[in-house]
Amino acid sequence: MKRVLVVDDSLSVARQLENIIKASGDFEVIGHAKNGAEAIKIHQGEHPDVICMDMNMPVMDGLTALRTLVALDKNVKVVMVSSLGGVGDKFTEALKLGAKNVISKPFEPDKVMDVLRKL
Amino acid sequence: MAVKFFGQFLVEKGVVSSEQVLKAIELQEKVNLKFGEMALSMGMITDKDVDRVHHAQRTEDLKFGDMAVKLGIISEAQLNEVLTRQKNNHLYIGEALVRVGGLTEEQLPQLLAEFKEDQAPYMVDRVVIPAGVPNGTLLEICADLTYKMMTRIADIQFRPGACALSDEIGSNDLLVGMELVQDLEARYVLSVSSGVRRMVAEGILKQGDVTGESEEMLNDTVMEFVNVVCGNVSAKAAQLGKNIEIRPPEVLQSGSGPLRVPAGKTGLRFPIYVSDEKVELFLIT
Image 1 (cartoon, each protein chain N blue to C red):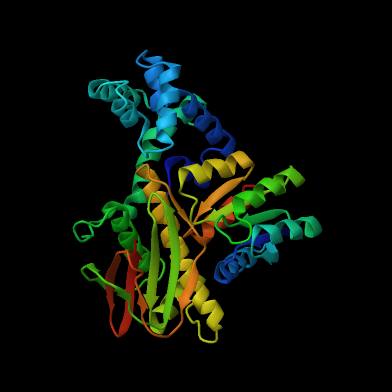
Image 2 (image 1 turned 90 degrees about the vertical axis):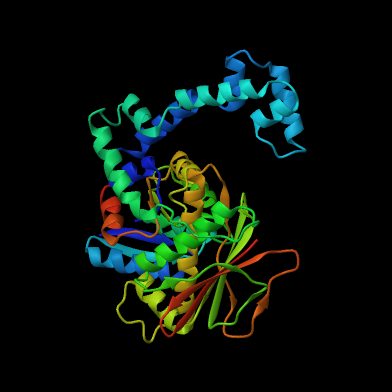
């Protein structure tokens, strides 16, 4: 079972992603961080297999957190899940910083699992 | 199911890898010269002229070419010549991917057709903004994507009413706002009655029944709806060469009196008619 950390300031997105991931049968959610700083802290203790992370969050945004996560662990697998995914500059920056993929919101549940399984 | 650009569509679809798209973007960055670089390569300006233009741009917000014309470095005719050369030499991401071996030439037309079909629901429909209000196109996108997401995310049946100027944001069960900054300095405010909040919650949580969900969770679904609309506005604006940054959404007010539009700001009200419910979009700019 692959372990996923969900990072999003929205409770409803965390719930939605958790429902999708739980239903897959081969992935499980091991935690929910509400901003990039919390994500870094949880990653250091839990070392999840995958991190699904929003971009637009208070305290520390997703791209700043991604930069730190990659610096701490070059093998970290981060998928950005964001309403800003379709902004060309944000998408490019995420890939340059080391994100494995970028999923735009709103998303189809199947699309999320397709992306996670291909990592 | 969201506003995307072609490179992202291909990575999300798994047709090309993120590494291949990055290579293609790097190639684009080399080939697609900026105005100043192109004018330099055409021998129209010197390095010293570039410095003069950059210096002048610190105090006046003009594009490089327009500033060069204003300073008398190039003529209008030369400006158009450079713009035409930029346009004719522009390397698109699909062609760049072919060049770096991510796609074959044969694959490209089919994938472009699939992309066009994927994005067809997000073609902007006309929304009439009162005359004289600046940034009309971007405000139209805000309203249009709100309508489209109401259908796509929350499956709400509605009829959009005519946009009008307004000096207050009327009271409702919940008001959620988001700041838009950079090329559009505005506050996006969605005002919903509790019945519409329930419909949004069902759509966001993908649950047929949201009875028993906490107030916090229900309000959060409306904040997420606003986040999705404004993020897609930013993506659509980027396609027009405009940069819109968004801030995290916030609950402005939950169930009390109207809010005044601050002095010096323009308030636009977009009524959205849903039977027995009240929904309004306000854009304060």
